[in-house]
Length: 221
Image 1 (spheres, one colour):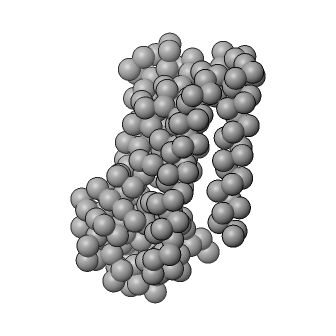
Image 2 (tube, rainbow, N blue to C red):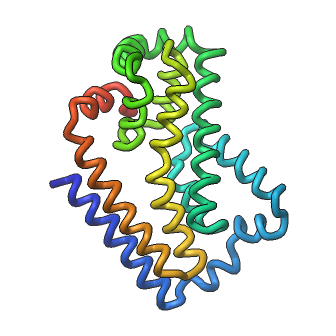
Image 3 (tube, one colour):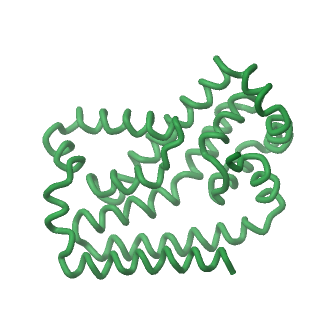
């Protein structure tokens, strides 16, 4: 019931945003948005800067959903989701290799029990299990990347599962941002539909034993 309550709350918020967009409430806000103006003024250079900033932001634990919202606002639903996904994936790689190449021994001392359980959990069928972890999603994204980098799991399988698993949420928040930026209720409606669809998938995965195992490992301390 608690999970259904959260889903209902998000749907209500997005519905209110859609109504506000239809009333033109975001028109002025669009004109004053720094990110949108920056992209418009700097073109490709601006996109590269945003991409890099997004990667750095998510690599230190910044919520990728917020980044997708901003990118969707500036670039539109599809392009915002694409840039946000690639940026979050680069952030994932940075954190992963930061752990693997520099602080593995320190992390092993700090998270010895978590590392052992996490590696045992995803060392086999890595792509599928990481994909499910990203789709749920649960726990800390940054901690998941740090733990994975400190294990012997396949890097490319971890990145492939993460990249594909990021897409649903990136689409949801990017289209929500695009709906706000363009004062377009259709984009917000797409966001609501995507959210409901993703919630159904997440609800199914939520019942799996994997959810409980991962939640115990990658939850914030």
